[in-house]
Image (cartoon, rainbow over the protein chains, first blue to last red):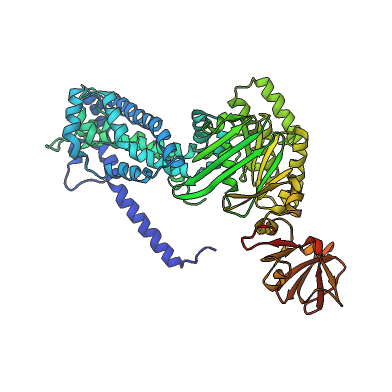
Amino acid sequence: MARRVPTSTRIGFTILAWAIALLLFSPILWTILTAFKTEAEAIAAPPTFLPETFTLENFGAVQDRSDYIKHATNSIIVSFGSTLLGLVIAIPAAWSMAFAPTKRTKDILMWMLSTKMMPAVGVLIPIYLIFRDLRLLDTLHGLTLIMTLINLPIIIWMLYTYFKEIPVDILEAARMDGAELWNEITHVLVPMAIPGIASTLLLNVILAWNEAFWTITLTSGRAGTLTAFISSFSSPQGLFLAKLSAASLLAIAPILLLGWFSQKQLVRGLTFGAVK
Amino acid sequence: MGSISLSHVNKSFGDVQVIPDISLEINDGEFVVFVGPSGCGKSTLLRLIAGLEDTTSGHIRLDGQDVTDAPPARRGLAMVFQSYALYPHMSVRDNIAFPLKMAKTPQAEIDRKVDYAARTLNLASYLDRKPRALSGGQRQRVAIGRAIVREPKAFLFDEPLSNLDAALRVNMRLEITELHQQLKTTMIYVTHDQVEAMTMADRIVVLNAGNVEQFGSPLDLYRKPANRFVAGFIGSPRMNFIDGAEAGKHDAHSIGVRPEHIRLSTSEGAWQGVVNVSEQLGSDTFLHVQTDFGLLTVRTDGDQTFTHGDKVWLTPDPNRIYKFDAAGQAI
């Protein structure tokens, strides 16, 4: 039975929830509004809320100055490429951890997670030097590779959790039916884990899309993604605030839309198994 | 062909020895039931034969060929699981066709075999449904269909009926027995239900704590149980056991009498007792009688109208008293 909540409490919490949501959304809203202002209005004091003179100038300027299309293409290649590559590695890895665990499996899982607890800057110098020596600096495949490695622990963990929910009987039935390992994974495991795999893919595309530390340090002109694109507009003079906003808006718009349209899938995937 | 031979098979999970040492010979075409209480190792033994678990030591041979280290896919056996284990994302047709696809059977032959299996198992009108749109009995039929299409050397059943309701269970029991008569393929069937074991098996393996207590035909086990465990496990209601002085009169540590081998009288007999509970089934009545050596179960005809507190006399059939020594072995 549903718990009875007094109407006043419900109204109170609704207002609180909206207030928090607006507070969290306000920087994004401010960015959107600023993107359509002139540079002068963007730094005006006191600031205006809605643009007084609505302009699309900033977007044109941004494209002219540093080629939005190229950066966006790079972002797509790196985020989808690293996620797909990650899935190819992670699906067999998660299979073995979920269905053929050893005494060390838990330790390996924890160890993988622990790499995410280390600040990225801790390995900046070794990775930078390796990239330099292997001539991977400012290349798309180099960036895809590092992004795969960074997100692999999360991909494996997520898939491991989903795979654990799949009854092992069904995989054993496939083995009895004559399926070799490859067929067991492609014909039975993957189709059954599609919701989990889809949300893993989405989350990791978003993570890779928004990743800034490595993209900014390991790329310059050629392989730069949208995060590098944004950062190129942050100038200490503060005279490009409107252009920076326009650039940011262009950079986050695709992933925001992707997230918006797939939020059902994401929530379903992230809470998969929480309630049977 | 499908003879299965186990020699000195041992299985341990870490330090826990589940099956110490089992040797068995199962003949081609035989219906063998592994029966025993839960945790006796019967499912593990089946999974060792299937190849789903690795054998710690010993050898498993199929038609004389050593398959101890062969993966399940290469053993040519089919298995029906307790949970049915159907592929939820595939239609009934694709479920049944899956083993044939794995064997790279030509499509025309797949269609022919799937249609034949579906007709045999009354599944023809469900072929395009997903498993979740089927009832428990239908799911079980699909699982059996998936097993029979590939014409395996032997079928392995792991408690296939325990998720079904009682009426359906009796039906499926008959269907599986008929299937065996029709296919004449070796079947190994695991159950904890001694009624299933008695009614279906050519031979029964009674397992207890990972050891074979007895291997024989159902009536052999009923008439000549090798020990007290088998005597108590086979037969329903279970055998009455009497220890102490009364057993001493028969030169045994303990004696056993089946409920159906005790004669009941209101006037005279060997043992006196008082009716505790009377269970009337219509065809039979089971009386639970309190005597000097404990509660004894007596099976009598359905017309008896004894109730709680009635005084009765019990006389065991002298030819059907089972004697056991201190170790529980039959004398």
